[in-house]
Image (cartoon, rainbow, N blue to C red; front, side, top):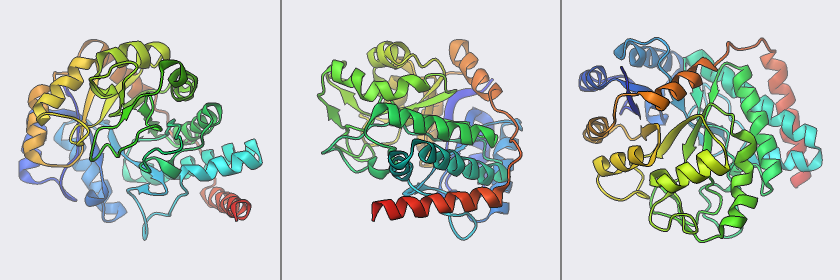
Length: 341
């Protein structure tokens, strides 16, 4: 049985110590970052090593490949993709154009990932930014209207799924109002519950059927003044599972981010205790990885069911003309640039 955590590693191949750790602790999945990536062949070998280490050829391998500022695969081997805001710009010109561009970009990203063996993309975002918020979301967002954000996020989801890649919805129940970068500090949002439901949560509700979602390390004081969503049983039960209606696999954002308080072990216990199905650890520090593993249970019960259901929802990629798709996307990017000039 596998344990309820997803881990990163430090380099471009598994060290002997990492291999021993992974074999002993059996994480459910893995996540890659730029430090793990050199060439397509090297990534394919690394992904194979990771899966071999847990004796599971279908073990999920995740990456953050959004486009724009958040793109782990990049030149010279992989193309640059636009930030999410570009789809919003096109959507304002013509709704169909915005959705087509979002779907095309995600379908092309999926093709890149599929060739390397990566099976999960931490995308789409349904965060709705507001004036004065920290720039950590910024132009990663699709817009500032919940219905528009949800529509574009759905198109991105479709593009990934058509390419054989599983989506992870983030950052539930919303990161758009955060006034701090959660890598460095804990944002506190003091917006009333009624307004959160009208805006932030409303963008996630039409996407509640997605197979996986990632939490926000954000305090919503109207709901839980003490704990960020990631470690708040109240928010997970009443908002994420309740108001939003998400019933898929719920993973934390990175447990090593400074938004969370306490030791890595304490954070891990708090995440699991609040109701997250999966703990995400990203930085590849083996001592921290051991703390996470020691505090995460084996997957069982509803968490196991949700994990199995998520993986079972992945479909083989559909045929498509990659060259034509890239040309069409480039034309739409040019049109958006002209409109914004």
